[in-house]
Each structure stands twice: as C-alpha cells, then as structure tokens.
Amino acid sequence: MKRSRVEKNVTLCFVLVSLITISFPFCESFNYGQALSQSLLYFESQRSGHLPYNQRVNWRHHSGLNDGLEQGVDLVGGYYDAGDNVKFGLPMAFTVTLLSWAAIEYGEKIASAGEYVHAMEAIKWGTDYFVKAHTQSNVLWVEVGDGETDHYCWQRPEDMTTSRRAYKIDENNPGSDAAGETAAALAAASILFRKTNPHYSQLLLHHAQELFEFGDKFRGKYDESVEVVKGYYTSVSGYMDELLWAAIWLYKATEKEEYLKYVLENAYDFGGTTWAMTEFSWDVKYAGVQAIASMLLMEEKHKKHEVILEQYRSKANHYICACLNLNNASNDNVDRTPGGLLYIRQWNNIQYVANAAFLLTVYSDHLLATNQKLQCPKGEVDSNEIFSFAKSQVDYMLGSNPMNMSYLVGYGPKYPQRVHHRGASIESYKENMGFIGCTQGFDNWYGNPKPNPNILIGALVGGPDRNDQFRDARGNYEQLEACTYNTAALVGVFARLYDLE
Image (cartoon, rainbow, N blue to C red; front, side):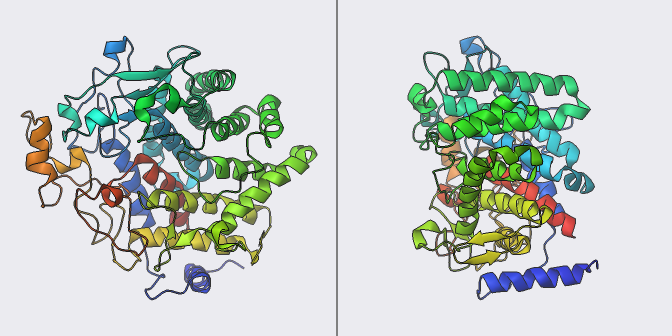
C-alpha cells in the first residue's frame, strides 16, 4: 500500500532518532527544491572565461580571457575551484564527475524540479574546458595560475594581475591522477549527452579514452610533475584510484569489456579490493569505485566476475558501515560532532559529509532496487535507514544543527555572511568598473567586518568544527571557504529528497 507523505516523514524521523539521539529537532521541514536550484546557480558564480548571455549571477563578469595565451593554447573557460582565482584541473574534474553522476542517477528528479537544463549547462561548462585543455593525445593542461602568487592578492577575477601561467602533464611529466579523473568526468558526461547531442557525446568519449590511455601508459603523480600544486591539491592517495575510477566510468559509458577487465585485473594491485576507506573525496576515489563495482553484481552478465566484485562490495560496505558507525573498531568508523555531523578533518570538513551523503543515497537506492540489506559488523540495516542517515546529514547542513546555521549560502534565515571568496567579498564589477588592485582588495575588502556585498548563493562552506562551533569571519578560510566539489556532491541528494516532497 502506498504510504502518505506524512507517514513517510514520520518513518524517516523515527529512523533518524533511532540512529542518533541529540538535543535539537532533526525532523524539520526543508525546501529541497530551493536548495537544488541554489546549488546549481552557484556554479555560475565560479565560471571563468567569457560569460554567456543567459548568465544569471549578474555580479560576475568576463575574466581570464587570456588564459593559456603565454603557452600558445586556448584555456579560456572552466571553473575557479573555490574563493581564489586559480583553475585547478583535478578538483574541477571531480566536480564534473559528481555532477554527471548525479544527473545519471537522478536526472528525472532534477528535471521534475525544473533544473535539468541548468545541471547540463554546469556540466558542459566544465567538459568544454577539458576538451580545450586536452591539446594532444598525451598532453593535458592541469592548472592555470598558481596558488602562491594568487594568495598574495585579494582581487576580483575580473581584475586579476597575478600570474596566469598554465601547467601541463605529458609523456615526460606524467600525471595519471589528473588524466584519470578528467577521463572519468568526460566518460560520465558522455553518457548524459548521448541522446541530446550524440556528436558531442562521442567527442567527450574520444577524449576520455585517450586520456585514460595516456594516464595508464605514462604513470606518475601529477603533483610531482606540476609542483606548484603541492600544498593546494596534492595527490596524497596517488594515482591508482583514479585509474580504476576512469576505467569503471569508461566501462559504464562504452560497455567495452577491456575497461571492466582493467578494473578486475588491477583490483588487488591498485588497492581497489584492499583499501577499506572512511573517506570519499577529490583526492581519494576508492569508495566510489567500490560502490559502482558492487552495483555491477545486480546484472546477470557480471555473475562470472562475482568473486572479485564481491571483494569490491565488501569494501564498499565497509565505507557505508563506517559512516553509520557500525564497524567494530572505532578507528574503522567516521567520527561525529556532538550534534551528529560526520567529522573527517578540520579544513573544509563539509566536503566529506556531502560526498558521504551522496554515496549513501546512491547505495541505499541500489539496495532498495535489489531488495537487499546491508550487513555491518554491528548489525543489519536496510536501505531506508541508510537514506535516513544521509538525510540527517543534509538537514544538518541546511540548519538543523546546534548553531541553527545553514551552511548552504543563501538558504534559510541564517547563513554565512562573510564567505572567504574574492569575487563575492568585493563590490561587483558591474557596480564599480574601476580597477581594484592587489593590496587594495586586502585593505578595503578582506578585513572589512561587514557582510559580503554579493551573496554567493548555493555555495557550501567548510562548515563547523568538531564541536559544532562556527565563526563567521572572512579570514576563517577553514570554515568559510566554499568549493565547487562541496556543492556538486549535494545536487543529486537534493534531487532525491525533492522527489520525496
């Protein structure tokens, strides 16, 4: 019998209370459709390049129009990763992979909210740039600008005077992690464009396949070839997870056995079936690989690979159980704040929470579709309990927390006012077209205690500390800086939650 919305909400609230007992209400009502719309609007704030006629964030203007010029390539476009004006290829690619995965899983739900066109525009803004950045079979431009010189200045992207030098990986300077993640992003996006723009879909797939071959043949960490990225987006996990990640997305995009064979044959040596993870992030993709590999088991044609795929599933289950605090050893579980938020590390912790919410949502839907339950060391949980916990994390981020603060900027009555973001913290270029210099930005805007003049709608900031505390000060970049991959992880979850409404 079909249950009413009220009955469903009561069930969700009951499950939440049974999972975590805390002192503030978890069963508040949130407008997930609004959160979805705002999250997709955020990507327009992060655009680099020549802004289109239908640009909705009107406090931004064209920027980075000479990117790549010094190196003789066209690298105009793409996204600024966070509150600075550097274009970092690895996290940008992960952002696009997450957005594409969300649209693959929840495209109909995004469309029912009226946001599918905006989602596809956000994805294509990234994929157009990656096609440009892949100038030769074995050449990928992975960064424009550098963090050190950029961080000496506090300037709107429209006024940039910092270095726009571009950096590449090639046969002599490999970067399998960056090549692999970009291949994954392009492969995932190619699935989405297959019906609406088949020529473009084939173009993306062609670049994805070449990038995977390049990354696999010339192996190495990209931060050892492009050393300026160290300290900003160092590839701590190495490149093996990205090669598995790229291969499994290429398999999903092509159904070619060679890519599945790669995932199976390298499962042990590359750590796919040996690493038990408690983190899924722009750096560490193992949990994502393990989740997708485990889902292959539901198809009859993959039963012949059951032994290895079951090993992948075991590790995927470990990650889900870790988030639910249902593994035996405490260090095999993810810590939580007193208010119930997953806690991985101090700087931009919310990215890990958002990623976990997305993976848990996708995995719970997989279990629901296959009529399975999850067996954790501390007990059995069903798909509804997993999804309910993911919802609890999203609701915390939207305001159901001890600070009564929404960490999604622009959502709800109380949200961060001083986001650590150059463009948002300085008066709009359209309001003041006069040049604002490097130190002028610091003197007049960075230290200004007033709220940002431009609201960075849809940005998901770094969030509270391990004790649920949050300080809204522009210099508090660990908590106040938002990143594209933070918000990207929640697009799919917002769509799934909107569908409940």
